[in-house]
Image (cartoon, rainbow, N blue to C red; front, side, top):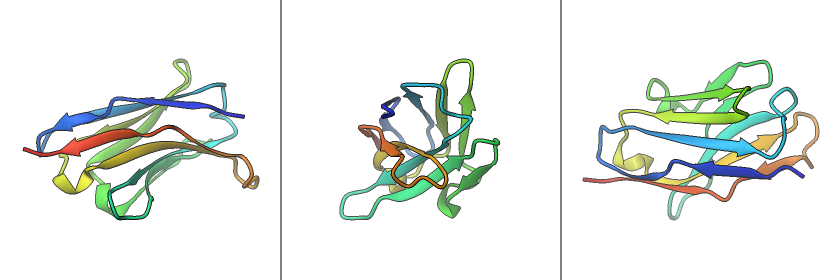
Length: 118
């Protein structure tokens, strides 16, 4: 069982920045793909960004060039740096850990609210 603890959400004006953090309960980056998802009211949960065990990253088209996913192995933390935020980025953001090839090993954080509004 992997537990994920997120932090860093909040209220920000359009054009502003926020950084989300996710700390797993163990050293899993060499095995698990780490991702950030979001869910806005009335919408399905969608993938925002992912970082694979080898370091390759993947982004949703809607956030390319604005968001950056990274990880710090020494701090055992995954980050989502969000710049040039837009009102449509408003959502609950969830950290996810998934073991490739093992669908039963998929874990979620509790979610953190990001609100972009003037």
